[in-house]
Image (cartoon, rainbow, N blue to C red; front, side, top):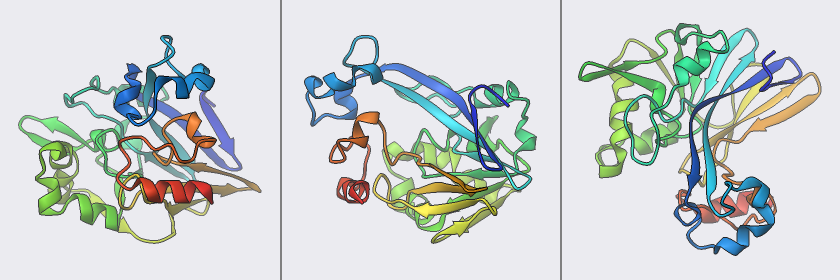
Length: 244
């Protein structure tokens, strides 16, 4: 098992890094908070003490004989503010090829979570994981792929990383509610960051855990549940859920 993998019962989860931003400006993430608010959390800040390190991470999950990729990072297409991702190479370092993936699951449809859903082939975009079933929460899919939303200036990533799947030779599965992905994995509805964000609950052999997606962006939010980054589309829903 890889050094950055953990086991929860029969489920193995490996964190796979697609891209890193070592020093993101704090004010670009939490503009309503002053630098001094993060002083108690210096251990989780960049070396300058005020910037926030961002790691764009996918999770390789082995469950019930399936190889599942949770989120696909920023992708191999040039994006503002992010370096080009390297997920296929990172997977190869763990002995996994893009053809090996059985299920690609998006916790939500944001630029740094669906980037490698497709790869540029000439002027077109093809599925990066040709043998996988691509799983989305139906309300999330319907919101982001609607004509008005997907045509927005800041939704280029939807047009090149999500919409091309509709015309490709891959399976797309739209799920709703608390959906059982495998005998050990259940998709939970955790809206707020996006209209229909989901998380992955893991329960196996008496052990449990959750892949939270972007329910939380910084360790400070564990104790300061009223802190929400600028990326949350419905901060009130995020705060209410965090208090439960």
